[in-house]
Amino acid sequence: MNKKAIFFILAICLLLIASITYIICNKREQVPPILVWDEQEYYVTDEPAKVEEVGQKLGEVTKKIELSKKPTQNSESNTLQEKTEVFEMIVEEEDERSPIIVKEPNSEEYRVARLMLKQVL
Image 1 (spheres, rainbow, N blue to C red):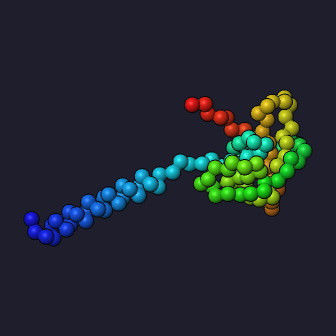
Image 2 (cartoon, one colour; image 1 turned 180 degrees about the vertical axis):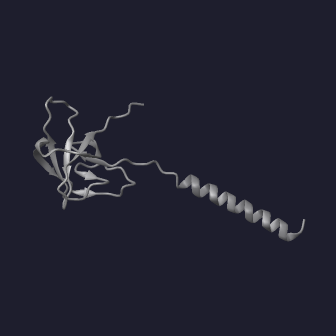
Image 3 (cartoon, one colour; image 1 turned 120 degrees about the horizontal axis):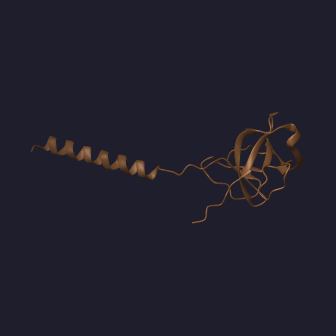
């Protein structure tokens, strides 16, 4: 084999190794849209809430983090803007897992955020 052929094969091998390494290192787990409220994780849905379901104001989101990260602190979200209002949801039957309602600034729409279930491994 001549030097050009060996160089070509080595270049292809290096490209293949670099590509595989890049794919493996960039494989990240998808993080859902979450709001942490009262030590609980809520999944922020696109489900609209009716005005008559909006209860007492509980507070506001104080920190927005990157969408690729999972929020851990109270009133922190990876999808909702800071100053998003958080409300109780008026439901017919009281439940420990009652959803909450969120309303982002500069929006007239109320959306439902549902309590996320913890996975037991």
